[in-house]
Length: 101
Image 1 (cartoon, rainbow, N blue to C red):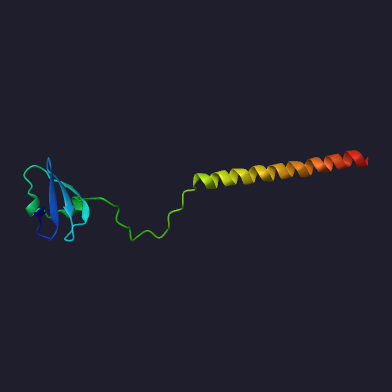
Image 2: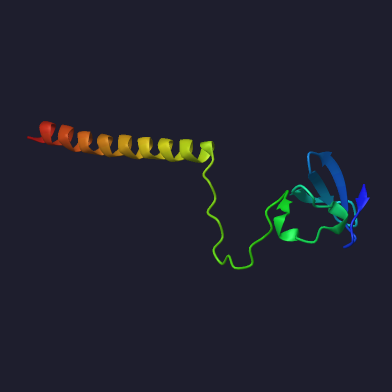
């Protein structure tokens, strides 16, 4: 592990690629250095590719949940049962009308 000026650490992965860890050893992301750059002197942390997306403070709308397969199946069954009930009611009215007249 290579100690950095800001208290973080870097692990050399070869070809100018470094994995960056915070002071507690938690992985933060990756940095790809250009030729001539030294990780010990590096300060352009905007180039850090994070492992996990950071929460966006400007987001005001919660993401909509993606329906699961079971949810879609239940919706399809509900629609089939409703359609069958409607057809049954319509047939019953036709049969009643046929026997009454």
